[in-house]
Length: 227
Image (tube, rainbow, N blue to C red):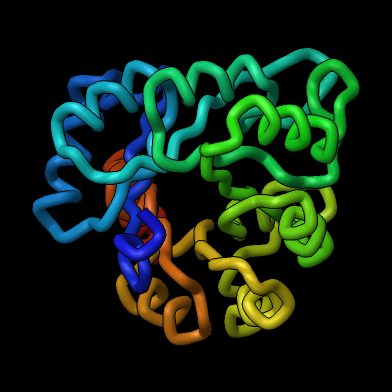
């Protein structure tokens, strides 16, 4: 998969339960549209969606399972239960929250990865990070890809976006780590996607700007209300 996504677009095909396009049938067709448009891979959430997408489009899949647990703010592939489910459906890469926050059951990322890599030694992993320190730590822990996914979505980075300060966060990550860096998070235009590759990202994930028409519509409505 690594060579297939190099300098390519990964399209995130996800819809939450309260969104009109929620469901595997919708998501597999969304993934098909992305494939026809030239996507190199798909990022998807949940066993049902991933299974349908893999069977329907045949592209590599970065898989996650979003699940909330009491007592923890980590919800992207938070425990080994979700890892087992993702391995079972044959995802090419498992992405997980790689922030410094405590996971369900009081576990930290190091313990989670040690067991995960021991049990599934052939599995590839993507670290969804929020800070430069987390990116460096994820590299030490043996991840295969570093993602900027959580930048702006943790208490420490709240309100920040990948492209603030002319993509400075991405530039810092690319300079600091040796692993392939996947740019993800609030990349809203083709021009922005091109810029992150120019600044050294290995590949780029775009989700809401392509696959969530409700959010796209809201942005248009918000803008035209100014006039």
